[in-house]
Amino acid sequence: MKNGSLSPQLKSHEDIKKVLKRIEVSLPLADGRAVNTLLTYFPIEAGKSTHQQFLHLIKESLLYNFVFSCSEVEKRLNVRNEKAAEYLFKKAVRKISKATAHGELGELLLFTLLDVYIKAPKILSKISLKTNRRMPVYGADAVHGQMLGDEFVIYLGESKLHTKFNGAAMKAVKSIKNASSKYEEELDLIDSHLDFPAIDAELKERLMGFFDPFSEDDQQPKIHSPCFIGFANPEMIAGSKSEQEFIDNYLEVAKDHIGLFFEKAESEGINIDETSLFILPYSCVESMVDDFIEYVGVKK
Image (cartoon, rainbow, N blue to C red; front, side, top):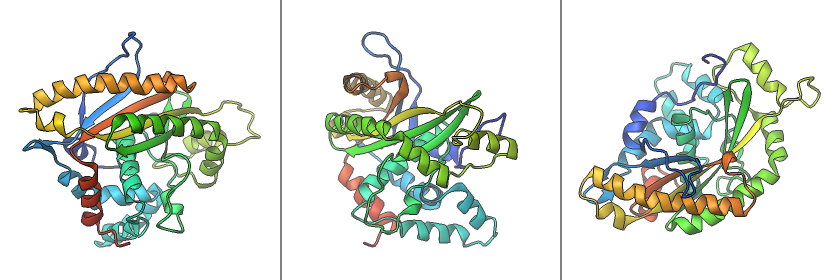
């Protein structure tokens, strides 16, 4: 914890940034309004996006940090057993099924982006509460938190891995609207199971006050709805002869996608200042999900 802020859960930000890269750019809407966006991509090799390095990071530490709370991870790793990380990984795999792997890979990517690039750690581990590995998690796909000055921001995130961006954007906006209408249910769940990584007693008391209906402080947490959309665009990736050409092509595609997403958000009554768009193009969603299942060893 630094200067009253929440510390990210992941410890390998620099390694992650090398394989889940970010384009440092801010693209406004066509009418000039600023919006919150995050453009990311995997390394490109031989005309295809490569996710093998990211799968290695998933197996090394991302999966169990995504599945379990910071407290549970730290408790197990602090035992100083050389097999502690392996135990956590195998336990995490048992929470995932072939039936749910597609959605959970998207959720894992959203978790990673929020922790690494937004520096907002997970405060609720929904997937760890699953009693049936074949059932999906309902409600928000990610629940993260961040102190911004004296304001506590809760990120109720949505993730979509699709072949086409447009279809994913339509579904994502509907999900965001539905989640925002049921945010009190999410707050109740957070209150019962929240987990704050690496904070002192004073900050913990402040944060707990946001969920106390009897608190004299009537300040409420701010709700923000980040949306991650992974979409296939093999033509753009294969047609780029260099990384710079790929980035140039990506930026042109991103302008259209950003405009479409925020147009749909506004049409559903969503304030564009209360949502953000994270995007990631890849060559093929089916191969990425299949490789994820095989690499981490999902059994059923």
